[in-house]
Length: 464
Ligand code: BGC
Image (cartoon, rainbow, N blue to C red; front, side, top):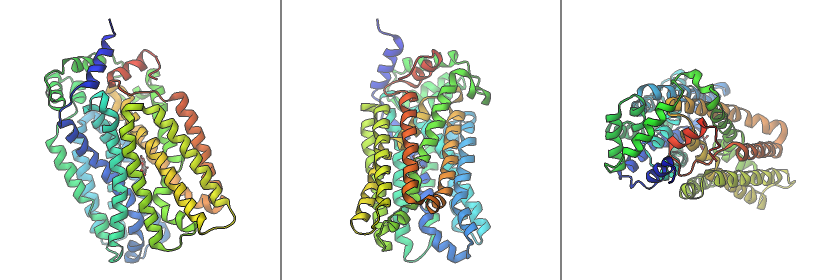
């Protein structure tokens, strides 16, 4: 007879999940849209804000980077709050935070108010980054969890592209208040959507409310046949040695999962993605496309590649699995970064050189979009035990924001000091380290229930 866990996993994978789960995943993913929009919009808005408030360089840096600091704090606290008050409650609070931040920014009368608004927006982004993947992973059936959680990354890329386009649309009038204020719309949609959606069934079970857990499972699976899944969740909870405390994050059976989450968080950033996302027009101009509109167009092209390749990744992720995509994608990033460094090394700039640089940037983003982009957010929603899932995921997301902050702050200085070539080669070397790290440590989670993944850490078996 086959292992009962195996049978449950298969059942969960095949569960004809009701349409409801799509709605739940899509609304929660709006948190990703706000994440992408609010991190992307500032590049185009800054020149106009600078004119309104006559900002010093220091204040400009603060307006940009305070979001990342807020996001780091939001991720760390948001995960813990989601364990305590529930995923749904936390997502409603996230929507309120986004709306408040966007309104304060749009209506700010001085730079202090603007910086405060941006810090609040940052908190919202942090809350979203620790809670959205968590919520989706807990309502999705095992066989579709990969692409449904990746909706979060998809929404991030759509948000970034939307920000580029909105910046472009308002560039003529220079109306930065609209650029920042428009985030209220997806914020309101997230809040209203979550008010109508249920709490995560796994969170109810963890609070000891089996009746509510069952109710939600019936609703999101679209069938009464949920007893096996519920039993699995409850068995896992009784076997779990964690008690939901912060100190549990470093228990021996959780430690490896923490190392993987934090490691991937750092590698996702130190391989340079946001130097491209935040500074693409600058990189493209330095490659020889001097017209501003040409640079903006090429940037929008990169944004589009990011969206399209994320869709490709979502199509593949539950079919070929996380590991193959991750390893192939990072390998592609290494090659692209190597070529990019070489392109900037070549003595003559302009013409075909600029074309090579833009195409290579696109390949690099494409490779990120099928690997480290979605898979980092997916894995940190899959690999932690239920009792500490929110807090653990918050730590990984917080590490991601801290690394993002360091890279964003140092990129321009790095290029000034060692030149563009060596900067991209440095990111290539770090991508080699990311590949080795992933090859050795990252488990395959495709098609397994969250409960099976949790059990495999406890029994000390590899999940791969
Ligand atoms: C990263 C962001 C990045 C985005 C680009 C996300 O997975 O966490 O830092 O800007 O991907 O698509």
